[in-house]
Amino acid sequence: MNILVTGGAGYIGSHTSVALLEAGHTVIVADNLCNSKAETLDKVKQITKKEITFYQIDVTDKVSVDSVFSNHHIDGVIHFAGLKAVGESVDNPLAYYYNNIVSTMVLAKACQKYGVRRFVFSSSATVYGDNTVPFAENMNLLPTTNPYGETKAMSERILTDIVKANPTFSVSLLRYFNPVGAHESGLIGEVPIGIPNNLMPYVTQVAKGKLEKLRVFGDDYPTVDGTGVRDYIHVLDLAEGHVAALDNLTEGVHIYNLGTGQGTSVIELVKAFEEANGIKISYEIIDRRPGDIASCYADASKAKQELGWVAKRDVISMCRDSWRFEKNNKE
Ligand code: NAD
Ligand code: WQD
Image (tube, rainbow, N blue to C red; front, top):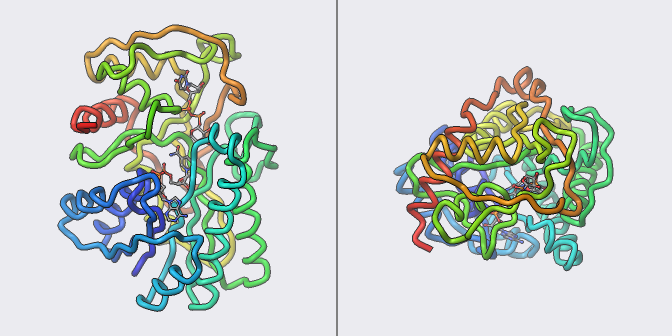
């Protein structure tokens, strides 16, 4: 199939482009490079030895989006393009609501105009809010603590309503848990701008000596050791989950958790990193981070049953692959 991958130069989009190309699909990337570089797509070509068509466009711009749909026979869209920094979304909500919601609407509209029926959307486990773990797809969603999370909940609702009115439209809403890791080549991975907000890139930068020590946000949660528990998922497993979702897409709205189903605490992740890479990570415990919840992990059974997809890579591989990319990354 010819797949339009928005945000394909980004972290998850680039790994998914590799998986799509390896599965025999043709990839057309639309990305404005606001949080990525075009060279990443060269690395994707180097890994797969396949070509990619790239449009440097903003997917909130309907004229640009229309030109992509008119230039290609698109069979499906995977919509990754979005802003994703939780704290930034609190400071600049309008940028987040505009970018993340308008992009979804512009793309859905182009799909209607050009008769494209398959749409896969990057959602997030954040839409569950502070529910009881494990999070299952049929749970009522709770408010998130930030505009970023709300853009995901709203985009899910918009796409669901579009399907209600157009039952032949096929939508897969993929709720990612905590993506980490990198391609085993060390060529592509996550490149945060500035000081990382997320745990794994922070840990790899401590390992590299770019940051002095990890600050662990609270050790008084009701968890195994008091630190926050998350469901870390290797980005290559996540990428394969998209191929499975696309291949199994049928009419209607389908919601899937993409997680491992296993929770790992902050301290357990630090220990796994040390074991995987033989590097000591200094840390100190500080106060909780506002907005954090104690535990977040998936009930991953629906994706297994309906898509035949399960996450295969363990936390040790996630730590090894994240570190390999950080070492190779010259910045
Ligand atoms: P990323 O920032 O690496 O990739 C997003 C890409 O979208 C970037 O290349 C950026 O340049 C592009 N982009 C942003 N706005 C655009 C626009 N208007 N037009 C064109 N391109 C645009 O982020 P990622 O981690 O790869 O995340 C991909 C998607 O998955 C996002 O929608 C994100 O919200 C979602 N998600 C990510 C995580 C995570 O922890 N990384 C978790 C859950 C959901
Ligand atoms: C993981 C754990 C922290 C950094 C966020 C977004 C979510 C999704 C994924 C979106 C928590 C602890 C972290 C640090 C720490 N993003 N931590 N010290 O908060 O689960 O999810 O990223 O696209 O929407 O909210 O991920 O990696 O920030 O935190 O102790 O320096 O590590 O408290 O328990 P989170 P994270």
